[in-house]
Amino acid sequence: MWHGQTVSVVLPTYNEKDSIRECIEGFFATGVVDEVVVCNNNAVSGTSEEIAKTRAREVFEPRQGYGWSLRKALSAATGDLIVASEPDGTFEPNDIFKLLAYAQDFQVVFGSRTNSSLIWAGANMGLFLKWGNWAVAKYLEFLFNTHQFTDVGCTMRLLRREVLEAIQPYFTIGDSYFGPQMMMLVLWSGARSIEIPLNYYERVGESMVTGDFWKALKLGLQMIVLITSFRLKTWLGFGPRELHNVFHESRGPRPKPNQVRTGAGQPNP
Image (tube, rainbow, N blue to C red):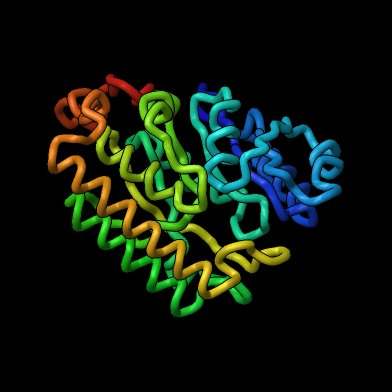
């Protein structure tokens, strides 16, 4: 638990048999994770056996795609604080403390993999992926006139339960570009959010998308189309009206240093 709140980690998996056990055990070793939910998305043979050696709970999603898999895992999570990540060795389980540290002031904490000081040897973050993610993130930042974004493709992030439950009914993407839809729904809801830099390491095994230039390019174009379409709809009054700024009123005045914080998503530790 973290300050009296339960913590769930959700991991979609397809081709991570050789790294998933170490990832799960790494999250439990932090001492703050109450449950790990792994969504088996038609994963390679032997993946379930590796999961069974841990305390993680396995769920299944037959519809192929990162979005479908993560959505299933999110729906199965029970924690007050939900951390999404990937079990391919690219993320550091101990970085969960960075996300949790900001969860006192923010309802959603997005990660970023584009800080050069935290991109380690062998990480798949070359010129095209780094600056492509940065450019699309800046495009989203500009269209929504929001806080800094430097990475639209980072899959490690934290959501408070009330935000997840609010945006979940509006998930429609099942493919690899699901991440930006979640980001836009968070912004549209008015939830307090921030982006912070995370460690990024070499992947264990090969990625089904970012390891191929043309697949990565296609993914980037899909993200741009999705972001543009969503923003145009909101400008024209066709966005999800029931979700718009549902958390904005909960912000209230800035609390004084010793004042107990109140409002949605702000329990006092």
